[in-house]
Length: 282
Figure (cartoon, helix red, strand yellow):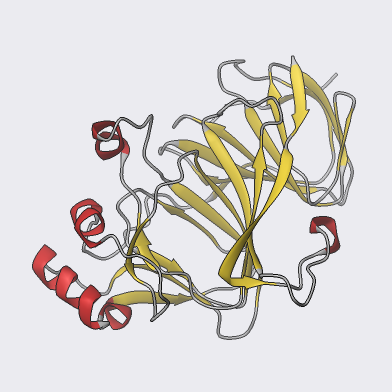
């Protein structure tokens, strides 16, 4: 068994923010805004999943990620499915997922070039507690005024279709080739598997659960499928590690877990199948 607190890395983004929660440190007024917080293995390993916090003041690019097959053609290990949980949303905040209607690859490319793509995207109102699973190939964007947690396959490959006038490189050939230029179909509806245990996504490249309330017992997992623990509120302990919001821990093998009444956390693990029983009381 091993329990590792992952190392936090701040990533500057033009659409980022300076008003980060205290757990992530202050950002000087003259510094570049921080858009993402990455949690990486301090042992230098390259695990299957990557956890991020995102803080947005403006829209991200309209973008797409390659699937596993396309990534492997490029010599990469995997593509990039991702999932989001909205923590906080300002009034009017939106997430763009898929297109309002299906179009040809030629129409998609032309719309990316002339800017009409932003009107073709299906923009959805975002509120705290919303969760989405976005398979690779989904055309998407995240609007301003949002704080969210992102869990993704661990691959930093993004193809920009349109960037709202910012002077950054676009990747039209790759993006058009990888994109499903059609409406987004939600692959999974969340459900409560047990009291305080909600499955936010399954059947894709990873499972994402939200666990709320007290737990005392052993986390029982296949050591080949590590867990990522992401406390949102409250806290607790896993092994000898103290859990607290603003951190992320990776667990390999069984470990003893204690959480309190106010605990609210995400749990992610690779694979399509949900564990029937994740905790064993002792």
